[in-house]
Each structure stands twice: as structure tokens, then as C-alpha cells.
Length: 192
Image (tube, rainbow, N blue to C red; front, side, top):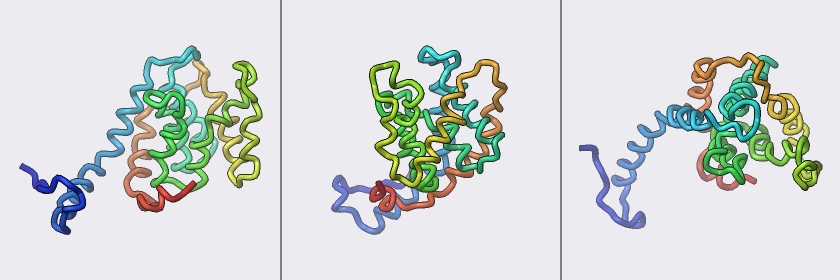
């Protein structure tokens, strides 16, 4: 049986207790990429009315970014940008961004976090919303990068004829990006 702490309130824990928790956490972190890749498969079969399902859309976005010469971190962000659709349909971009935040640059985090409203440029007018809602972020240094992401890799990645790379191509990239956080938990909570 694995070691466990005996306290029932975190405030009563000792350094030895938190050493046990840290050890468990490190082991759990080693399988993070596996859990993310498994969760991504939940997007299979759900087309949401589009010509392809969200899983194929994710592969297509990542493939387009890869073929366009984007770096590995960016490609992984393209792959995972809609991963939140299954359990956060009203704010999927926030969920994906939160998951990615400790592992990616501020720029890539911002792109994923805001891609939902930027994507609206292509359809909001058809559902009674302002297609230019993204302009409320116009002063942000990452505005152009997010607009470019949506134009080149998101809004056009619903093509059933496009030949995407398979997930096995992206798995090593996901594993490398999620191997070690770039920021601490405290830093991640204090951004935005």
C-alpha cells in the first residue's frame, strides 16, 4: 500500500506529510499527457453540425499549423484548442487555456484563451451577435496572433477532404510540451 498522510485538514499537515503528497503528485504528473490525449478522443463522433467531428477538426488545425512551420508548442495548442468542448461548451477556450497555461508561452496561452471570441468574427453575425466582439481586445499585444490563428488554423479546419496527420504524429509533441511546467502554480494563478 502506498504511503498516505493521516491528517484530515490541510492546515494540520507536516513537512513529512507534504513530502508524501509531493511524491504522489510527481507520479501523477508523469501521466498527464496520457490523460490529455485520452480526453481529446472524447471529441470523436461529435460533429456539432459541422462536416467533420471535433477530433478531426483538432487534428486538421494541428496539421495545418505544423505544415505552416509553427513550433511544437504552437502545434500542440492548435491540437488542444477545443479540448474543452466536451465539458465546458459555454467556455471551452477558458478550459483549454487553463490546462495549457503552465506549459506554454504567455502568447500561446492568450491565443487559446481568446480564440472563441476571435472565431466569432466568422459567424457571430449569423447568430445575432457582434462579429467584431474581438475588437474589445484590440490593444492587446497578442491580438494579431490570435486573429491569425483563427484565420489560418481554426475557421478553415472543417474540410472532410483535407489529409491530416494522425494523432500518433502529435503524441510525442504533447508529451514534450506537458513534461515540465514553464511556470509555477502561483504564477499561473496570478496572470491575466
